[in-house]
Image 1: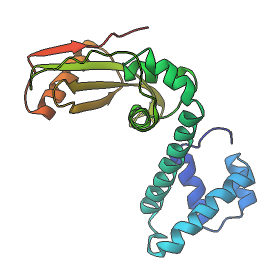
Image 2: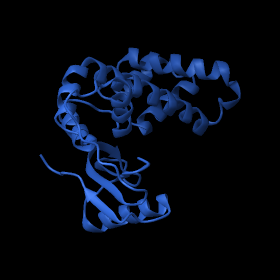
Image 3: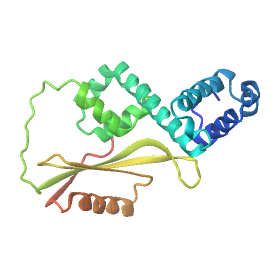
Image 4: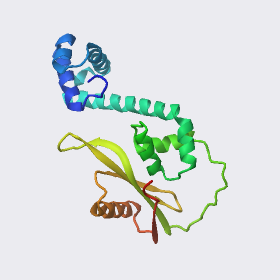
Length: 216
């Protein structure tokens, strides 16, 4: 089990036990994880309480700090994966200007980060293509492009189980302003609602909406 990330419910049980000063060995045995893993969480907890001792009796506040730590760890791991595989990413990116589709391919190859983290990486680190490109200039409010693709898995708020997630992205052709929405379905109702939400975000409707080339 140590090779997988503990869900927040399981982690909270461990943190509550640590707050009660239960022995590391007992917690490890009860939770069926290694003592080193429990020791890591104990170290993290001690660091949190060292700077914010007043939240020691507020488990919600403590868990919110662990959530931030987990997010930072994920960002570091995901960025490292992108950096190690930058040559492959540059090659794939040169053959596909659809980042939603690129994210799908990278997820299949082991990337576990979010679509937005890939966008940030591409903006900062991906090599620019040397191929001739014809840029199509558009007027304000004339065109918007839509992407809709797989974005990995998220935890369902009601069941707590991991479910497939999809990201809807609409980008305005003139300003490049963008709207993103993560959903758990690609049915027609979701597709329509995402458009409505995007139009509400932009405060208007473009004359033309151009779908990206979905699929492989």
